[in-house]
Image 1 (spheres, rainbow, N blue to C red):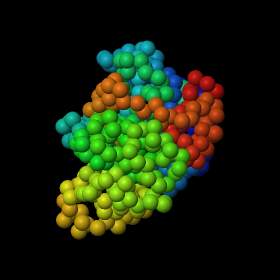
Image 2 (cartoon, rainbow, N blue to C red):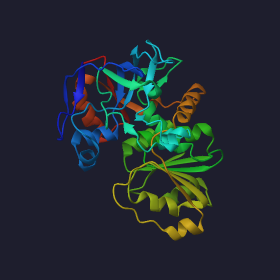
Image 3 (spheres, helix red, strand yellow):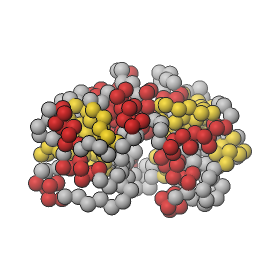
Length: 343
């Protein structure tokens, strides 16, 4: 089969032939139709310090995918050949305390698809049945390919009640944009998103935000003034990882404000812990999705009218992967999708 391959611990991928995987007793084999390009994939391709410490090459990367099941193991019960599926990229152990208690997203032995095991940048991928989400109602494979990051957005956005609340989102990347759409869909009063990219701030308008703020020119406090807010934001979703974002968020929260943090900090962050204490602020870390409660919420919201298709701005044949990665790295885009039926 054709696959993008990280042959050694060095920058770059190559599109080459690799052995076609076959499923074990509890696994399913998926013919990949589409994959999304994630920031994690950019790190692995460039082989930065994070990748060097987290990834064991050789490896097939990629974890955001949608495809059709073509074979199943003898012990698979609920997934059948022909099913259209998306992949949950975190493979858990099933036996640690959190897994046994039904908190699989907190597994202490999580193995990530495309990071710790071969992934989906290939014509075929094999996954445990427990990591496969079946789309019982057919959807566009492009949309199915971004269920993983969509799940990050939903998990982050739904960390706290949103009905009637004023929500601040820092970082208008694809996940921040999808989170904005979720906040609007479930009943937030005001949704404000910040970034420094005019392109992505422009996309935000189509995702239902009330105000897209360029923080290289304007302050978050200015957004409050323009919207007539007097007590600060109730909920904040930190999606950027920029070291200045979290302190700025804390400054602009109401007493009892709540923060869900998905963005991985690019440098140490200095926080006014006195304000956190005296304003009784809650900070919650988010990693991945709640398996599979988030997935049920995602499908239900799409069924009830939530639209996130606008976040997909570029599509490439798998053979044009280098151009696709350059587009994703350039930042003048939303979500970039690879079509594995074209080379």
